Length: 395
Ligand SMILES: NC(=O)c1ccc[n+]([C@@H]2O[C@H](COP(=O)([O-])OP(=O)(O)OC[C@H]3O[C@@H](n4cnc5c(N)ncnc54)[C@H](O)[C@@H]3O)[C@@H](O)[C@H]2O)c1
Image (cartoon, rainbow, N blue to C red):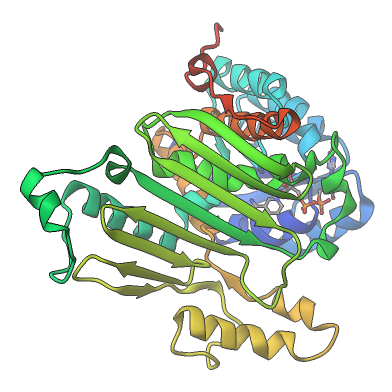
């Protein structure tokens, strides 16, 4: 496709206004937002005025069947994805869909079928896989795995050297994700089992997707989870090669401190990312630290040294003010990869290539989320069946 794309936005709530609208107006390959569609008058008005949508409607059918529209952006609540995607795909529209793509396998099956049958692109907004800090973390880990460089001071027991012993466990990589959040901020719909699905299907899917992306062709074989699927849990995923991913999530933390930390431990080295703003690389000579720009920085003069310390200084400026400071603080945005994944989707439409996170990737995160919830329910590990991972659909 060689012309600029026309967009329709379905679901014009908080997230569409925070990321989809700015992305659509920023990307040079988008000519206009023709439709804004929402069932809420207030959100429709807010979005269409702010992002200059040409037309408004409460009916998604009207927006996604318009022959002029090329791409459909979906940011409704999770449970509405299937009918919107089925209709958009049947009319040849390419789709950018919020996570989770589907709340269960049945929904995912319908979505994959619709997208493949109609040969349209679908990209799921698991944007963490495009966050510059995490892309750099993966790249440093891969370099080390393929060509391990060790610190000259690394001590290896002489007996081991003599007998050339390396244990199986030492050949694997362990990925750890530590998440802390403040549950008083959650909208209650997220905790409804059928509308929001709880925070495994609504949130942990991000880190489950990240684990699959990190280990690429390595298939998960077993998953074990504990706690509450609603909002306080741990998940342990074992991959075929022996690699593991561990995600721990507490809702009892504080906005005073960043939400996520990532660590990859591999062959005497540790690669660490602090909330998308700073990476540290330990045990491998050469690069030791990298810092990353924020997506939005309303106060570049504060914490100008960047990295984690700089980010915390900026954060304190806002959070210490008064009880309304939360709104100000929302304007401070570490780079989670929102712009990168959207631009990647647009490129995939224009160049007819694979989107950064396609329908199968989207389904796999839902599958792992569903299995994690099953593991909690039965209080035991559950297998990841090969036929679910390598999903076949007869069209
Ligand atoms: N990728 C991310 O990091 C990220 C972050 C936040 C939210 N999200 C996702 O974005 C989606 C929206 O979240 P939000 O926080 O903006 O919620 P929201 O409630 O603010 O917005 C959802 C909007 O969809 C509208 N809507 C619901 N059903 C509709 C329908 N059938 N047709 C048209 N409009 C409809 C609602 O009226 C509402 O305005 C969720 O799926 C959420 O998981 C993703």
